[in-house]
Length: 305
Image (tube, helix red, strand yellow):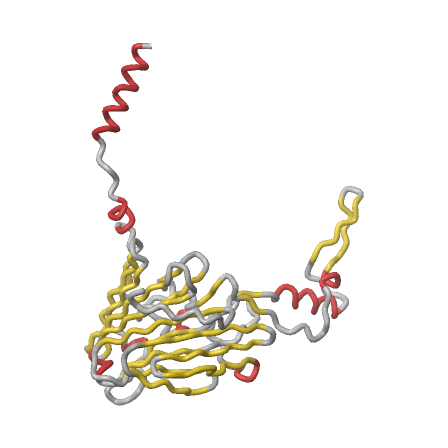
């Protein structure tokens, strides 16, 4: 009994004198640092219901390259899509009955015959599927007017701060510095970005919005831009510093809003392909982007929000 009391007293004294855990330091010692273009080193911000994955530029500037590794996706819990069931397939057509301990149990299997059953299995295997909501990247012009490519992104210094949920990306293009700060909203399906670079005042930097169509493959990395006629992206509203886009894919509809405070020009480059190009003389540009399944009047949160 005395021994037990002695042990308990010792544990009490030890606990009383122990230092508190510095939780911020514990979390931040696991911050992620990226120093080169690497298709397996993309980083994500999100809130548990929404995720936005970026490359070394802090946005989704090079989706084709990253498609070979960890793709640059934008997804939400509500973002699902199904191709139209034009052949009226029924789930029952995918089933095959097996005898199991005296019972007949139906299972969905890879049926080879008849052909219609095989097609039904393929349809329900693919649908519904996660929807890539859109690509938000940078387009940077070099001195000769051509667009900067992967090899032009130099001196990369990128960090994901796990304590604040911030991605800070630093790099240069033709020895001109670019700094991009990326956040996701804590409750909304939204991201905000702050860009600091002399390229802004030189009118050589734009934010690109591009919308893909699902590819019906196991891995959809959001870079299928070859099906322009199968979906629509309409500008529903446009004003100074604001756009509202309506996306329609088969029976799936959703909206994308973008807002910014500094002077900028908005242009439609191609179907499903838009550019926001800062036009002022400042070296700073901030913008917010909100994805939603309905146009319910929710405002786009600013970068500070």
